[in-house]
Image 1 (tube, one colour):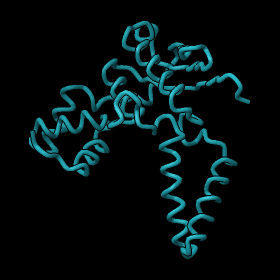
Image 2 (cartoon, helix red, strand yellow):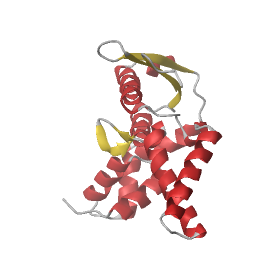
Image 3 (cartoon, helix red, strand yellow):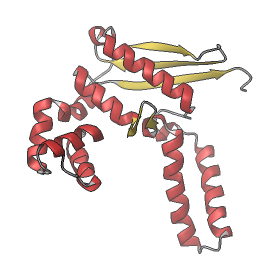
Length: 199
């Protein structure tokens, strides 16, 4: 097995929109040859996943997950293009896994754009203040704060979180793999998380 540099995997991912693990496998299978890896992914149909992203999603399901003991529950709406895919075992399993992810990791929103502006401003303010407190000049403090914001998004935005069942990939990577596997555009539209005693 060839040792593939992470930068090469990232480059292939940006080119094809395929998941990180698929890109790594493609590069390993082709001895690190970028063009052959792209062909490999195209043959497997993975590179098509991103192209499906513009297609309309009118079907899907709402998955409910209640954690053992009944003190924590999640409802998540996941959309796809057809009723046929919505009824497949794989789609339902995907919905279940996403609901479990939300229960375990308590994200604020599906995407960055969904995080309330006041939360972002508040976090940024704290990170800048922390950096300045440690004696960093303003322009450096801003850069440090931005880096911490990226970390914040990785913890609090569902699609950017490490997937609990395989921390080497993100939830977005998992979603991309499902789009490729099922051949339809799939989106995680919204969710609600309920915990006994939470306001």
